[in-house]
Length: 441
Image 1 (spheres, rainbow, N blue to C red):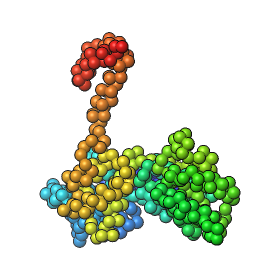
Image 2: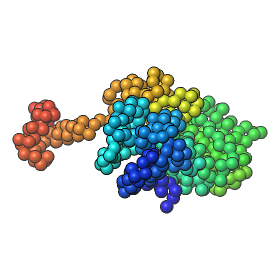
Image 3: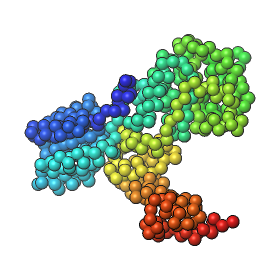
Image 4: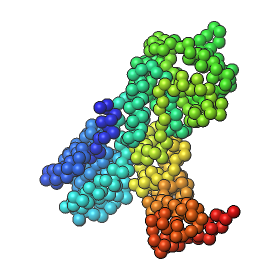
């Protein structure tokens, strides 16, 4: 089993901080019984040291401790890992302090003695929006994910990197195609050579021809010595004439070029469906099959929503390092980001995070500030009840269309009695008359 597959199945890591040995042991036992990885420590100083080594997804800490208390630890953790979630443990007498801690960015608090189910429920909720990725492989360090879909693609990329096969990477704009191309280069024997990206879209044909194939006295990028990797970005926009030249070049290219001295390994990127372009005659079939030796189709962000908290944490940390602005999202704001549509994928999410950091008047980015950046509600992922109602209404409309508005026949097809079926129609404000009129010639 590969390292990536092991990482895809790893349980969340929880750092538990308490100077009471008995409670620390009890919490550790309860969490480990649920297969979480647990690191127990007895002080805030030990917790900060452990966080660097252990890389937790969640921290559970006592509020009252000697030297540095839970509030001090919370501030230090926020400064270093802005989206790492923290749950406070408090006695009944310190509940007001715990409330202030949640207002200051803690995910929530638990009162002692801690009930097991209450503990596990808080942990599950916090981990849904936790944002500290565990990435050990340097070659793919730029790709932030815990999605099984994307981890499978990384597994394919690592396998492809071991050969010199040409790679076609497809996916919507903003899904990380260039990052994957770079990861393949860094994982390959060519990592010491140049990594060059040539933008096909928007380039003048003559200039692009010279850059790729070279003038008479100078070799172009496709034939350049030094090995490395050449990425053709937006290959779908290559002109018909240059498609012909590229096919001819690839016919003559060696099957296993020298990774250190020979021509570069070719990776093509496309945000458009090349098979559709082939059908319409806009892209050459022979070129497609020469480029498509290994094919990676990257999923949109909508299919890997579990990555949104990780990406948000990544962008916040990077912004903090670049600008010194240390801000975090309220838990409800992260939940909002995880439920809206992202047609621009990761690039759009990054732009929203940048906007939120710039526009938030406080260190904690509120759900109101976030909502203003993502726009109004139509793009939000519907609730379960709304989705179920929409499905039911569409189903009823289809079955009435099939039966021409005949309620008895429609009820039989739906396996409901007439009374229940009429109630469903009334609930979803559907009239059989409308469908009867449609069925008439």
